[in-house]
Image (cartoon, rainbow over all chains, first blue to last red; front, side):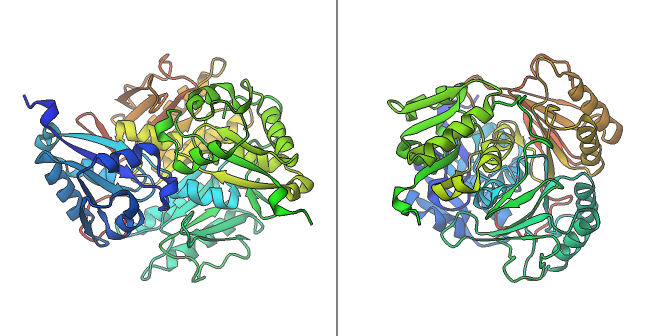
Length: 260
Length: 260
C-alpha cells in the first residue's frame, strides 16, 4: 500500500469570475500549497499575484486534455499540483475532464480534492440584481460537444417550464446562430417584456452588463461574446430601476420556510 | 442631491456553504467593513470568527422579511450593513427579497452591493465528483411559495430534457411527499442506474454524502433533510469508483472550445 503521506495531491481549483477578490479562502490556500499550477494561460494571468514564483504550466484554448493529462502526471509523480478552472471547477469546468481521464492506477496514486468557486451565473446575477430567485436552467450553447438538436430541445423545455434560463457560451466567432434561435424559442413562449440581461466578463475590471427585454434583445449584438452569459427571466421577473428581479414566490407571503 | 460619501451601504453577502474557508475574499472584506451584521442566527454562528465584536441582528427561520427590513432601515439611516445569506445571496437567497422590499426612496438613500458566494449546488457537486459538467436545472421542492403543480411540471420537463437536476430544499419536517414524486417522475424518464447523490451540509464539518442510483434511491431516507441537496444525473452520467461523473460532451473530442 502506498504511504498516504508520500502521495501527490491534485487540487482542482475553481478560481471564480477572475478577479482575485472573488476567490474563496480555500481556493487561495490550495494555490498557496501547490508546487505547480496548471491552467489556461488567461486564468493563470488573472491569478498571477497568488502564484508568483511557482512552477507553472499554461496552455492555450482547446488544449484542455493536454493540461489535465499534465496535471495528473505531475500529481502521480508525487507533486502538489493545482489545476485551475475559471468559475466553478464543477460547472462545465475541469473537474469532469479530470475524472474522465483518471485511470484506476492514477486514482490510487494521488489524492484528489475539488475546490468549488463562484460560477459565472452567480457572478453575472450579482451584477444585474436578483434574477435567480426561482428555479432555473443552465444551458451551454456550445455545439462542439453537444448535438444542436439537443440544445434546441432543452431551450424549448426550459422556456415551457418557465425556468429562469442562463445561457453559457452564448456565442463564439464561428457560432452565432444558436443565440438567435434561443431568442426565437423564448419569444414564442414568454412575453416580449420579459427581462433579459447580457453580462460580459462578470465581476472583472472590464465587466459590462446590459438589461433589456426579450422583445428588444439583439442576439447579433457584438456585446455578446464567449465571455458573456445571457440571463432570461421567468414570467414573474420584472425590472425595478436598474435591477432585474425575479420574485422569490409567485405571491410573497409571510410563511417563508428556507432560512437563507 | 444626497452626498454619496454620507450614504449608508447595504452589502448582501453570500457566505457560501457555511465553513469560513469557502467564503470569498470580497465577502470577508464586506463583513469586515460592516458596522452591523444582519442574518439568520445559524449563519451568523457559522461566520462568528469574522464578525466578533460587531453589532449583530439575528432572527430565526421564517423571519426573512423582518431581517431584510431591518437591514434596509439601518442602511437608510447611514450605517454600513452586511445582510448575510447562506450559499449564494443571488440563488434563492436574500438579494431578491431586498430588491422586492426596497422603496424608490430607499434606493436613493443607500448604496447596494450584492456579493456572490459558492452556491449549494457547487458545494455539493464538489463533494461527490463532477455531476454538473453538462446542462442542468435547479428546482426547489419547497411548496410554500410555489404551486405544487408548477414544481411537478418543472420536474417533468427537466427529466424530459435530460438535464442534470439539482433539487434544493428536498424535504422539510412537514413536506415529505414531493421528493417521492420527484423520484417517480425521473424513474419514468431515466434509467434506473442513473446516479443520484444526496449531500447534506455540503462542505461543513458535519457534511455527509451518499451516492446511489435512481433505482436504489430512497426518498424516505432520514438522511434527506432541509440541509440536503439531491443531484440526479443525466443519461450519460456514470459512477467511477467513488465519483459521480457527467461527461462534458456526449462524445469526448479533441476540439474543445470553452477555455475552462
